Length: 393
Picture 1 (cartoon, rainbow, N blue to C red):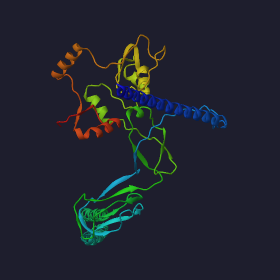
Picture 2: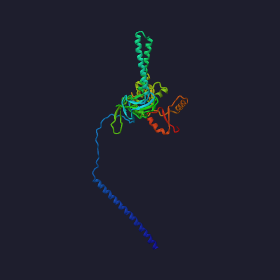
Picture 3: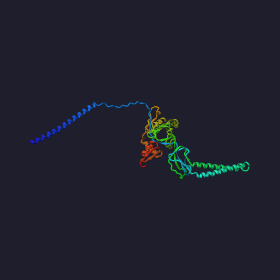
């Protein structure tokens, strides 16, 4: 009994000691944390106020110019592929690739030894014909030769001179000259080589202070470009840009032809499609229905300008343009639609028309590995109709 009481007392004492140790440790940690906070606050109170940097600028009103960047190709104003008009054997090559040649410089000389021999023979015949004509003319003056003999001699002289001129022209054509100042391209012709008629000799790129830059932009951008607009051209990194002027706009002739083939009465280039011209083609009445398949600011403005009162404007494209809806911006009683699709009944009608051959969809099918390039061509306006990616193609 006494032994059990002593054991129980020891357990209680050990528990109390453990609890006291834990509480003492917690109190010490709390005191240390509190002192740390007090020290931190004291240090913060003596720190200087943080310095803020302020930049001052004067606000100015400026006109915003939307811009885009496109990669183009520099093209010479004049560029040709040089070919020989007559067949022959190369006698001399008078240029090196990359060389700048002046107008009239001989580039390639074909062998004309046979032609020169024939020319000498014809010149002798012409000289004899001229002598015969002179002699017969003197005899005719004394009534010793007939007019017929004189006419024949004159004809023989004229024929001989004409043959000489023809042969001289042949010799001249076998001397191939530069038609303008240009830089010569690569060539693979050598003396002694026989060339058939129309063989490609080299290319000539005109050298001048001006050049063309061919570049493509998205149709939403192209709608705002006009002939005479200024663009900045950068030729290399770090060089100052050059100011150039738009001199021509490719209005996608294939798209115009497709519209005419599809039954359009009139198809206008983008550069010609102003509101006045469109209304003139419509007899001055305006359009009952306008389908804007681009829907940029410029095309929507044109659509509203050609729409007839009470007409319908369908906002088909997704070019990001805006159309102001207020009196004067669009005709009275006009309706504007932003369609996504139609009803089930309309879908059935469209399918029936397609089965009957009344609808033709211009589709270009692309393989799966051509999808990325297809998006590029679509943005550049190089695809006519629709582009469909078909994994089975």
